[in-house]
Length: 420
Ligand SMILES: NC(=O)c1ccc[n+]([C@@H]2O[C@H](COP(=O)([O-])OP(=O)(O)OC[C@H]3O[C@@H](n4cnc5c(N)ncnc54)[C@H](OP(=O)(O)O)[C@@H]3O)[C@@H](O)[C@H]2O)c1
Image (cartoon, rainbow, N blue to C red; front, side, top):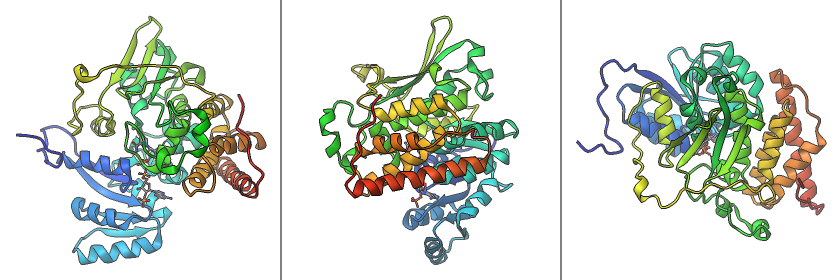
């Protein structure tokens, strides 16, 4: 039998079933998650959530018949309810941000895919951890902005956290099994460093003088991955790798000095772990997010992901370079925030979200993004990131500061690029 993308396989004896809430189901990761779920009869969709994308949510509800569908936007929720009534669907529609928390913590959902983009994903993701769910974490911003609190909450719960970011999923697979879920210092297991690979994005070789003219469409055209617009811009500035350095520090309990970034334009080696004895264990695969999603859904077993198998004989070259921090100041800012700790990552993340949104809506240029983030970090003091109130406060203050700087930029007080 040929296994096509929508072929439903029978449930193998003994494999446990799962009831899944997909937060951010209408996005790139959400859709890939549903593609993997569709291949396996043992996975059931308990709830789907989105912000406002009614047409995609209607299709998903009709196909996967979840108990609940959440639209954060109230009008979109009304529209969805009307469309689903017409389609004869039994799915119950909820609305508002609190409904995200309800479906992420519901006793009948045992697994939660956290695939909302940005800080909006933090409350339902953290709540699901508190409720000891099996967590599939794509929403890196939640971990970056509240890492200490997040990892403390994880340690106090019975939740299992599986990273979906392809790099962290790769590291997870290359670590000794006993240290993968601990959130403790992996160096005790003989690890010397974690090596995160980065494609270098669409502007890896573009002359720096042309960065100021880059358009949102160019920035969103990634050479190897199809992703949502925010993470695509983050990949183009390499802030994505900066956020991932912070994410790696929290997930694997190491300082940024034990996390190296290597540019690898082919996106075939997804990351590596170097051990004290000189061994390097790497994870390879096609650049397809269904691979880490399938790995995490089935963990500790393995299932078909629907992704193409890798044929290394057709892969001309695998290259690796050190990143150029002058070309990509956002990566440097991310590494510095990781080293500073406290609320520095919270501030970095909030300023980046505001700057990327402003770039995508045409208010600022591509080169303004790092300049705004650097200015916000320079203007704010960093505190211990102990409580959710401190994190919220730092997040709000950083957003307000970034917006003020952007308004000043619009009034003609241009920004200068951050220097190393
Ligand atoms: N795409 C990738 O390959 C990839 C790889 C690694 C990690 N990640 C991470 O995964 C997360 C999702 O990325 P993506 O590329 O899938 O993003 P995306 O395509 O933009 O999708 C984002 C999802 O979040 C929902 N959403 C947006 N704003 C929201 C809000 N305020 N409240 C509730 N829901 C909201 C969207 O709903 P609407 O459709 O209604 O707007 C959509 O379902 C990000 O944190 C990203 O960094 C992505």
